[in-house]
Amino acid sequence: MGLLTRFRESSAIRLIEASLHQTKPPEQAVSAMRNLCECGSERAVPILRDALFQDNVALQIQAARALAAIHKRCPDVHILEALNGAVLHERQTAQARQAAIESLTEVIDYRHAGSLVEVLKSNRSPVNVRASALRGLKRLHYPEIAERLVESATFAKRLDPQGEIRKWATRELIALDDRDKLTKMFEIIHGRRLLRYRPLNPDTGPADLIALMVQIDPKLSVKFLHELVEDDNPTVHTAADEALAQLRERGIHA
Image: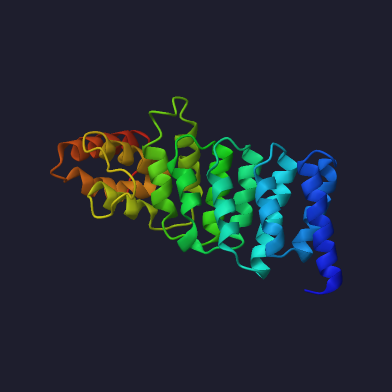
């Protein structure tokens, strides 16, 4: 690092420290963090980690961006810990968590996207934060997006009385460019593909998934429903038979 760059970094760090101690306005700290995106090194990581959890959204957002920029130049496990912590911090504002998600996806691959998956798993995650996590997983080419959305739609009932999470997950499943998504749901019903976090309730889960399949793609679901009607499980058989009858009433056939 050249002398001029080191001077710029030191000046930016001092300005941020002064802002966190409320002797400088936060706007100056935000500007200093932008400088650290260009010149910051490991020296700037501690102060940026502190700023990431301040009660100022602008500081939180810019701190996340600066940490990601520094990690690209100087990979640092402490940066990943800080960004993952901000993603999962449920008391953070949605804007701060979204910024942390966007920054994290710039510096990891899908094998290290556990915190983004955790956002989808938690029933307490707001829909806008879920949407950011999903965009991040798509950007990282995470291979089990359909399964995670099925979990969101299936297990959200108890803590989601308005059904917002299920509606969101259903919309995303409909829009998901995965030609095997109904096949995956069919395999989940039969236990050949397991959901990662919670087992499917044998009494209600198959019926819920069958109803979800019909919502996602009514016409394509007919093929699977004909197979499910022959299932030995009475829950599966009954739900599939009722779904087929409803589709026939709507004029939808194989």
